[in-house]
Image (cartoon, rainbow, N blue to C red; front, top):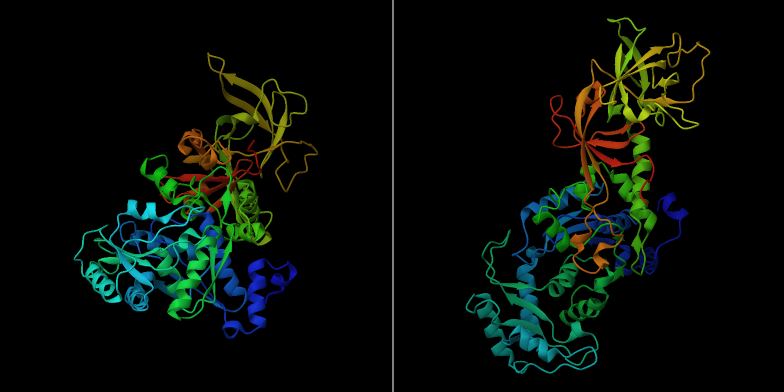
Length: 552
């Protein structure tokens, strides 16, 4: 075990694993699994599960299987399979085996036949409405289906004919024969197989019957000899059924444990709701930087380490709670502060002419790439007669204690000289179009012997070399803290200001920016080069997070 792991207290799942290891349960072996259904892209909630399953195995010298729960051919696609594998690897994890529930279709079919032979499963011809009526309520016991007393031979014949495609979809199902009076509604003869005539992304049209999740899940765990099957809390009531199937089939005793899923403010985690956002064009796609998907967060500039640190910080709980998205942004900001290159970008350009600077003179200034990383070094940028600063860094009638540029006032240009504002040029409508300033000799950063002291430091770009860039300023996708819990349609709470696109002038070093390169635009926030960016002709940057939390 790592020293880091010893420093913090164990979560309840780690306590279970350590107790199993001490008692030589499963011969001291730890094998977990991450079993996503390939019907959508993974989101930050899945990232928590990934970090838990893979992190647990890593901590205790075990392994993790990646298993795709592909038992519903109608909603699944290889596009989602590929995206899931990319996301897991991007987060920094790798699996020991790659499996699919469809790998076990033959074995699962054999398990179903075994239950029929043992008198523990039967074919039911009832409609879904009829089954619902007979199932009862939590306070009222259910009633037996009229087909529950079929003989083993009749059930076997019907099930094999279902598998051969002789009956239409919805006409028959295979149900486990358990207890229609159970206090656990899931134990009231659950459906374990249904008829589906759909092309499967891996098995084609071989199968006409497909197992339900509750039947495939535990048996797949058992086939793989998973030691700790970790699920979210909504599966607590499923555990009894999980154990029942394993016990009746007499197979490897995998065990299920549950933890609280991640719910986060100002977003939704339901795949169904996320799919609505994509299909109805409220976002540009699954990887839209406003989405809580891993691919969206990656495109927005979040780092794998920040997500892993976030998952570690929120821990593993036994009760659901709502985590403030600001905590995730804190870890993103903390990691980017460590790794992001500092560059200068001007969003609202205001032209500044240095009147006492020679017309054709260009001087090289050295700027630190990242003060948090001494090994990141310096880069060179050119200073000339005309520059651009942020319009917001000048005020004609400033308040007291205003330390940026003002008439007669002076500021330092980051990495360059101190300048003083001598004249304000305006258009006929009164709009400020240009500032005329003078630079202070001998005041260059790192070489200043001018004796002049100023409190303000502002960023700038050289007018002769600045490149134009599209900058996408992202905010939270929803205005409501918990949109899924609000009355009405969750989409009514979409933040109409969640994306603002502006043109900016950036220093020429960004002409070499590759997708996913991360930067701090000095005084503006953290940004990442978008995959759509095509330097040097087309520069696009996404805002990742501000320099500090500004959300109210």
